[in-house]
Image 1 (cartoon, helix red, strand yellow):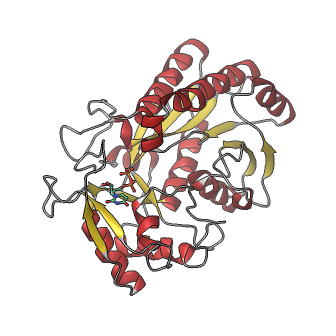
Image 2 (cartoon, rainbow, N blue to C red; image 1 turned 90 degrees about the vertical axis):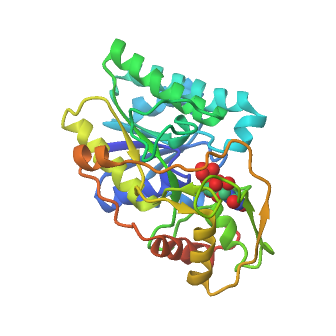
Image 3 (cartoon, rainbow, N blue to C red; image 1 turned 45 degrees about the vertical axis):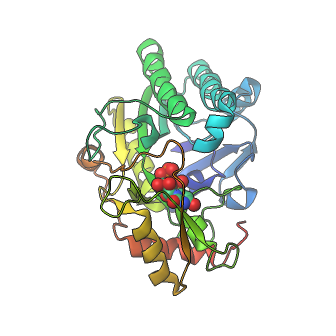
Length: 327
Ligand code: UDP
């Protein structure tokens, strides 16, 4: 099977490529390297540098390579940036996906696994969050991902596209080989920012709000290891290959940890005191996001290997302590 991974030089994309290669699949990567890193590209994959908004680039790629399925990670994913520069998100995420789907339809490629997000839900009405819960994004990032899902649905109705959308909760951790891991610039995510303290890159971690309606007042999130996310993409491709119907799945551990609990666990893992200060709330942060992933477990047979926060942070630390400046 030849699989095209769009955004295969990014964080979750590169880990999925490594997992596909471990499974013996033939992998093609396209990435514009705007936020991805050439160092994250698996040495065995065939790499094409280009942008999904460029129809000529995609059509040439689909003519050259015989692609069985696409896994689509090529998008911008920073909530804060999506609020200050919303049109960038409409352009790269929504318009990019439109160009991609047009090219797939034109070239007869009919299977796609798509990276979506818990941000499509916004402030949840109940926990754990089911796929059928109300969708009410509170930021442009989530809004564009929801629109991308719907674009796939209507394209499927008209042109027979088969899709699976995977809504991730908080991706974290790094590949066990130590070769690839999380590297965003600027970094905005909690675990890598915490680990910058023992790495000597930051004096303390800011805790964004301790007056939420949660047991210790800090926000609760569902942290899911990137290797477990990668495994779900492979299961989703196999599901489509077997003729599975269009579907949407949450991917999380189903267990929530507060910001304070994450900081405390990082202290234990790293042996560093990691000073913290309470800072104002960050705009648009829901108090509690925890997934129900029962559907992915039942239909895809997905079973996350990392359920323990200490193991997850140890995996991230294994990468960050050896790569304090990323790639
Ligand atoms: N957070 C924090 N300090 C930071 C970065 C994040 O307290 O320096 C909090 C943030 O408010 C949220 C949680 O950590 O409640 C996870 O944030 P992250 O940006 O990692 O992921 P998100 O949940 O926004 O996708």
